[in-house]
Image (cartoon, rainbow, N blue to C red; front, top):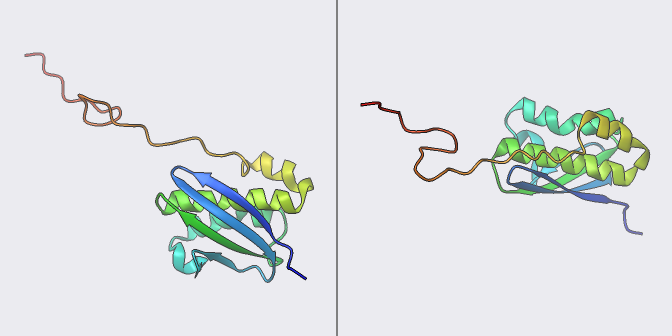
Length: 130
């Protein structure tokens, strides 16, 4: 018999994460590497574990994530979003709790494009009166 698994997609900035939850011992693997190797900063690892700990599933499910695009911070956010969505697929009763903490909301903040005739998105060249 095939093992039960719950999958979901998470997004943040330009990163997209495909997350699969399978019954297990609580291991988190990102792009075929343990979470400690892939995300060097403890804050990012803590951020990824938030939805699992909130729903009380730590140590019960393994997380396998494939993430592409963006930087480490965006990728961590995408994995967190994906985990939260997979948990809702696993148990719909946890939806309200995860929604209240904001884990199911896709963070809409994107990089603003640079405008022509300017140095950046908002920055202008120095104004000279004379």
